[in-house]
Length: 67
Length: 161
Image (tube, rainbow over all chains, first blue to last red; front, side, top):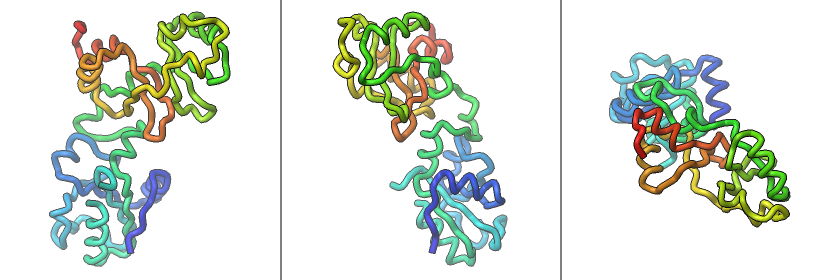
């Protein structure tokens, strides 16, 4: 079950090597994204779209907010 | 959107999936740096004057006025010990009775803006609402600084008001 994390945990985990993924549409990623994040829009999260991710390392996803 | 993405990743075999549910809005509102085409554009948080005088509810107006004027300001922001913004003192409020408590003299609950708002958007908002200055705060209400309209106009290359 995915676990919710806050900003402090995110920073700590990214520093420790977690993969960071923005799932918003690509144009929003182009304008602004968190340092080090890659773009995989929600509709592209499938076997093909996630090929570049390591399944054995932590992955953090984010979008705009809780809405 | 991110909860669905997190669950989908788990269904694809990812073992350790986390959801930063409050997302990019939370990050930007905290004034943290980003990457992307907007990253180098001036924003409210970077333009806000961090040296704006602050004061507390239980101070007297004369003390705050003297402190503000000595620092070259005709404004001060009322905060608590956590730097959460309670009110604003512009020139009009600062000119009140010497002995007045700040809690009575201040303009309470001023509109605040987040640090990530682009200067171009702030220029329009401040012009539309005739704001010469606006407090910039993080999402939890803590003061970042006071944004002056003249600084926004200068940053956006618009010298007319």
